[in-house]
Image (cartoon, rainbow, N blue to C red):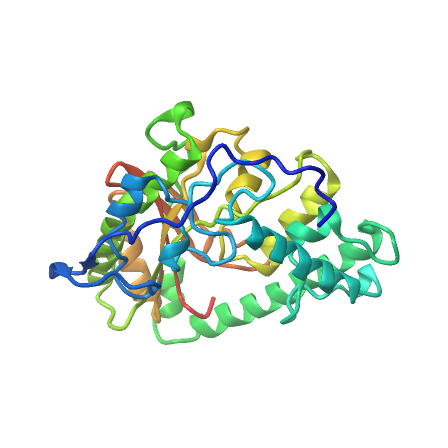
Length: 343
């Protein structure tokens, strides 16, 4: 393997969890008995995670993601934390090492290609011609990615505003006042990662139901909805003020602007290790086809929201526009995002 020094073994070897439950959440019709699927769909009501919560195997595998239900684990320490098995980490490492071996220049690294290197590997381990990351050559790549993304986002927003009545609705949405302030998960500084995930998995079913209520309030038919649990993919970085950390954050925004940053990275760079400040572990996203539907849904969620980021009024550097809320659901702070699907 190499690059990471000796591995710290977890206090508990990750094990194959039991089937989470035999019941599934079903919007509007209560609980429906039936066999638990091996893989859940983000666009359907989430399964019940009561079995995993009771077992404590609540962390989604960093490779398989939150929808492969039989790969949840409790491995939150050590060099391959976030992965159910060490083999998953080794596969990730070997795959990215092979990708980096094909690179000829830091100025031509493609983060959007089908065979793109993972920045989590590239920054601590990646080399080209025997040399580590060359910031002078790589920074223009990031800036160009941001520029291209902003141009695309701005054009999509102009197209959305051109629909009858949409410009006026977006103007009203832009006036919705943001809500700031420190929001923390119940448990405060005593909360650990397993506890965070227990809360997220315990809340995601009701969060889905809440999203359906927001859809009804929007008055729009055919709204796209998808739920998620934030992957805790490992970050090997240790110095949050290092310039490579800043660039990774730029890459994350530029290339994955609609995805939350990874938990360990956020803990190291934003939250001072306080797990209770992670408020996007359980998420639901709603994609609206009309500005009017988005506005009505936003006003509904604002009735319960603890915080609100209005990125229609204040788009990101890449031009990304959505509305992001935190809402207390089943004793857990969850994230609700709403946006027209093309923006």
